[in-house]
Length: 513
Image (cartoon, rainbow, N blue to C red; front, side, top):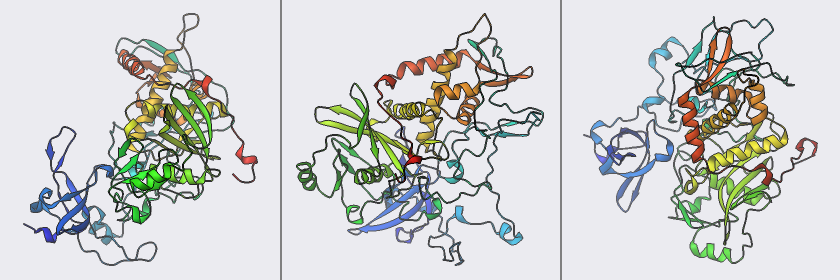
């Protein structure tokens, strides 16, 4: 059995932790860092196949030294930048010797997609679409844990549906509450082909570098041992204390503090409670800077220009990075608008969450980053943020989609919102002259401002699309209807469009943001 002193960075071994059921388990973990405090060794571990937010410092008594795997020694070979590798080798980073000997390159994960707006001949096209086309992070993030469904592949003999393909519906399993037949819809200016949902990926499946203006997608090629570790122990924000999930580039001198203190109105950070109290005597803000564009009850939304309110926007990004792993941080916030949701009480407007969006997006993104702070999660605020982003898209007269990749929690929230919104539209249809209701994917997209690709992927995710007697049908079974009705009863927070006071700006006509 190995000794504690032999455990180094890159080692893998089982580590004791408590799961959600408060039961002990021993998942495999990798040692990312070792430190010595007053003669006591601590090990920073990442649990393999678990989300990075579960990473933590542990003592030696939680390590199973009997099953330790030491890192393999790597030859110093130049990397893409001409520099030798800086991290110790580990089992998952090793390239099989057989592949090296034969000169073969390792296979790259391929995402199968459907094509839409087919030619007039409407030839049958082989191929299919994965169940979660929106979560390309599954290819980029090996640690990402998500629920997977069976991949359905359309056979070459089966034609692929388009947005305007005629269809009708028949009962499923002997009973159906609604029968919806698709019909040709209005033409749109742009032809939309079903391409890779993650626009940050190149055509050959290799992640490309993020755009330096606009995109907040993280470039994982620059991921190093420092950014893989949480650097802030605790954040005090108003009446809440938050435990960060991920690394955030706060100043180095603040990372050694037990608590980082933030002003909940301007988000300025301080190293002590005394510094925060002194700041509060000078801070006049009781709400986020910018324009209040929505208020209903105690919920308000503020629109903040990243150029006009640069300091607040940068502080907001630093705070958000503590809870977002798939996004990177640029101090140039000029190309972005920030929409901050707050909850009002007698002391002021307290931040609940926010989302950002590009002032000009060539990919029709209506959200760049989106976050509900941990104290407000699982209370319906996430869907409220998503609904508000689509409400803005409706006013702008556009369809929108969130920037990819989505985090695991983000994907769940968007899937749930898309499902509920589309089912709400389908169940509200009324038949005319005794015939089955008819609607097209184009019409669903125009009503909801959800991009067509997201509408189609959601219908497939819900398994509503069927091919029957030469046409595509949407079938709503009793289980789906009952589940939707139960979910809508729990969804108490909704956006009221009458309370929105928003005038979109045409940023393309401005010389600079």
